[in-house]
Structure formats: structure tokens, C-alpha cells
Image (cartoon, rainbow, N blue to C red; front, side, top):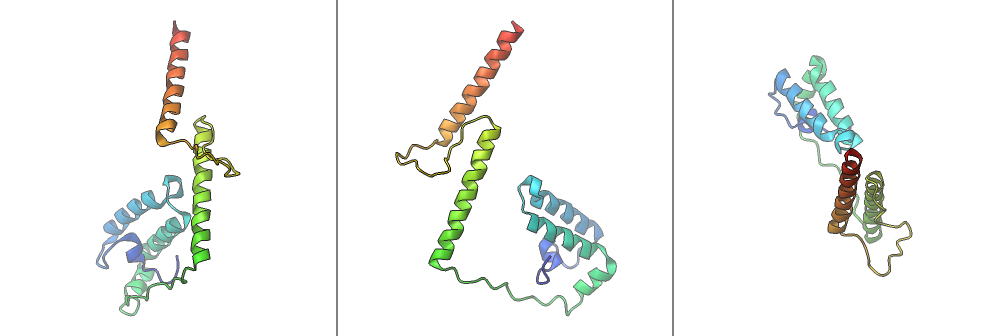
Length: 150
């Protein structure tokens, strides 16, 4: 956890929270931020560090002291340049496409995006087409099962 993050803020707790409230908030935060449940590893580690701080009485007292409770200044974000923002969005879009292709591969569907990005005709699967493909696969599997059982 970074030094500028308050463990109470990370867990969404008031400074007057007791041990039971801290534990309950920790459990909920773990469910939301765990990487296997769609969270990020950085957020999960921040939750872990916040809980470790608040469950230790000595560390909790140090965090709850008046000196420690001063609000820290917001983290400074670098100004986004036109190329920097576009590059970040391009990276996010590429990662999104990669993840979608992987999910489709695991579901037994053909990839939606090719790596070359050469779909000049604009033909891309829509959500409806993906659902139709999945529905056809389910129907085929049901027919095959029915034939086996007959």
C-alpha cells in the first residue's frame, strides 16, 4: 500500500470503526478487489495492507493519531498529452480485444478480432451474432445428447 493511502479510506470505514466492522469491511473489499473476481492486484494488495495495519493495535493507534489523520494531498497526475492519452487508450483497446478473443476461444467460438486489424469491410461480430453462435452450439450439443440417449 502506498504511504499516502489511509487504511480507513481503503476499506471505506470511519475512524471510529471497531474490530468487527473492520473485519466485515475487509471481507467485502477482498471479494470486490480479488484478481480472480475481476479486481486488480494493486487494489487487492492495498486492501491487504490496510487490513494488516488496522488489525494490529499498535499500528492502528499510530494510524489513528491526530498527526496521521491529516488529510494527505491528492496524488499528482501527470498532464495527459494528446499522444500519451491516445497511446493509453490504444493499449486498453488492444488488451480488451485480446481478452475478448481469449474468452471466445475458451467458449469454442472463433476469434472476433484478428491481430492484423485488417477488417477493411467493417464486418465484425455483434453481440447478437456472438449470442447466435453460442445458441447454435448449445442446440447442437443438445441434439447430440438426445441422439446418444435415443
